[in-house]
Length: 335
Image 1 (cartoon, rainbow, N blue to C red):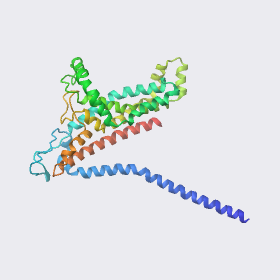
Image 2: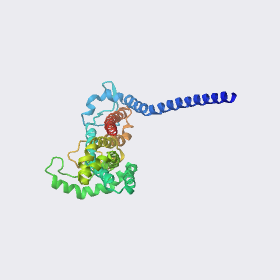
Image 3: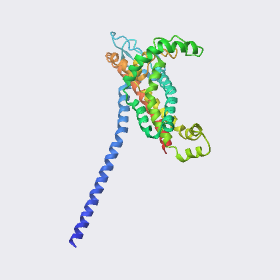
Image 4: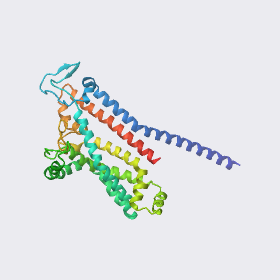
């Protein structure tokens, strides 16, 4: 009898201990799940606080003008609208917004067809025995540091484009606005788009391949049973079901391209103006922050650093919106 009572007490103690463990583990998961949103909110609050003087000084004109000028570093700071700034200082970033969106758009224009075709090739053509190996090799491109892509663009793409590709394009496509000369030295919008495209392709390929693999095999086999060719099955059965996934992945790739820094800085030319054509130098928000930070730190009023922080805040907002839309579309596809 005592053995039965002892066993019952042991069972109860074990059940209570397991309940405590489950509660602790559940609480721990909740804490870790809140870390990322907390970091995002903290980053937004920090950037807003740091950029607040610039937000007050620049107003909404900050987004629509191209007159970025740190002012005279050797001049005496003056008071403008209650804010201390260097003489001649003005901050406008429309050229950065244009350069960021244009280079990222070109990257998607190049990367989406290549990534989708590569995913189709891996999922449908490559033999099953080596399919995972080929996919892993393609996805390894995502692990290459961005500075390596920038170096490749600087050493290979820029000379090749400046001497051969861009002059030919200007001659053949010069009748299209934005495609005429001069082609410059190879640094510019199109070069940045090409380099960014190579960085975005692995993201698109991996996610589209996953979406293709999720298509019901019974529907694919039904297409073959009806006498359709492989190309017809892919075009009429598979692609309609992964169309939304492709859109979501493209937006996800856009988020990667929007925030790229070093690779763009090395090939864009870092110009402080909207490019006159597709070959001209330009700059993006992320690359511009890096290139201007050292000069901005020399501003004794701190307004230059505050304005750079404001650029970072704008970039953060754009990036969050783009990635949220992409994740929502991908979630709907998986559902």
